[in-house]
Length: 119
Image (cartoon, rainbow, N blue to C red; front, top):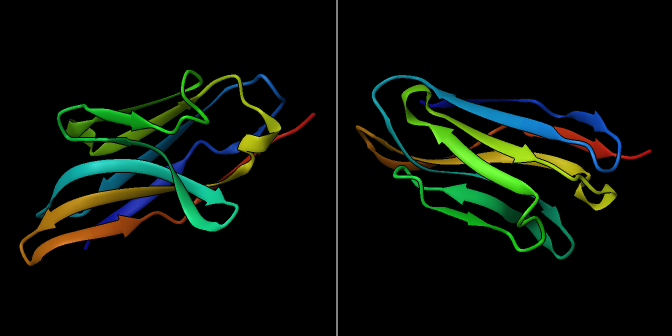
C-alpha cells in the first residue's frame, strides 16, 4: 500500500508563488509517472503537469511558462512550483502517481491540497 502526503497549499495574492509537494511512502514499490491535477469545468479533473521517472515533463497549456513540475526520485517526491498565480488557478490540487508493486501496477491519488489565489 502506498500513501501520498501532499503539502504546500494555501492562500496567495495574484502574482504570487506557491510550491506544492507530494511524497509517496510505503514499502516494496517503484514510482513511475507523478503528476498534479485540478478540477476543471466539464471534467472531473484536468492534468496540470506530469513527470516521468527519467524527467520528461508535460505541462498544461493554461499554466505553461508559470508552473514547473519536478521530482526527487530518492525521496519519491514530486513538486509543483507555481509562479505568477492567477485567481483562476484557485482549486484543490491532487497528486497522482503510477507505481509498480509486487501485486502489479496501481494508480494512487492524494487527498488534495487547497490553493486559493485572491486579493
